[in-house]
Amino acid sequence: MAKFNKNGTIEDFQGFIESVFGLPDDRFYSIWDLLTQQQRFTMRALKGIRKGDADKTKINLLISFSWLMSIANRMHINLEDEIWKRFPYICSYCGKLPCVCKAAKTDKRVVIRTEDSIRPHSLADFQKMFAEIYPSKRRTHAEAGVHLAEEMGEVSEAIHNYLGQHQEKQFSSLKSELSDFASCVFGVANSLKIDLAKELAATYSNNCHACHQLPCKCVFSEVVAFKS
Ligand SMILES: [Zn+2]
Ligand SMILES: [Zn+2]
Image (cartoon, rainbow, N blue to C red; front, side):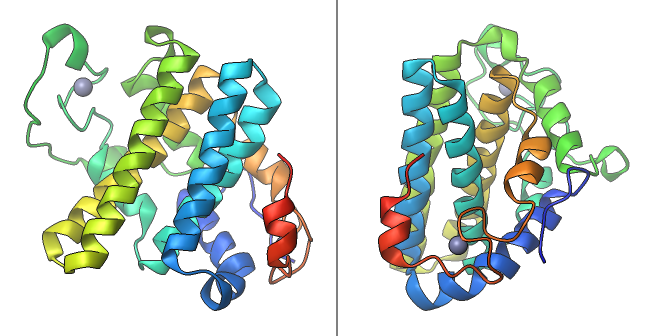
């Protein structure tokens, strides 16, 4: 049986997704199909925010995060490493903890350095780090949701560009955009007081969250009919 432990790392979660969904993903889903699923559940999470339905936001946020991992797996990207390079306990844009982008009207990305001795260990530690960099009291739930939507669009654009031209700088940009999306998943979770590690552990406690098989045996008609 495969499961995600609430004390696990982001890399553990990515590995869990590979073990449960790697086989059906590779056989049945093009990267565009993976992207469509990530978008589908992200948009449902936003619908949850619009309707003030915290449970709807939560389950769809978890599922969109799992499709993000499927895309990282497909592209052979270690997402935890990329998140850390992008957000080494400071804002990726202004380089400050907490972020001062808005107050300082930062309009140019600073060059940031990483200090590996302070790297968070668990997925829960990463969520705490994001709460410190981007305090949730500074934004509404809707603002956190709009930012997630913005990053979803940038992930799509980065995949489109990289698969079009295969340039190394576009691959770097894809890694950054996947990391930015992940940062916004943590952002929405912090705004709504969702303990992501705990909820992922509860949802992914026994193989696939829907069919409970290893590897997942959900057929396409069930995936498209999935209500959440
Ligand atoms: Zn900033
Ligand atoms: Zn399944």
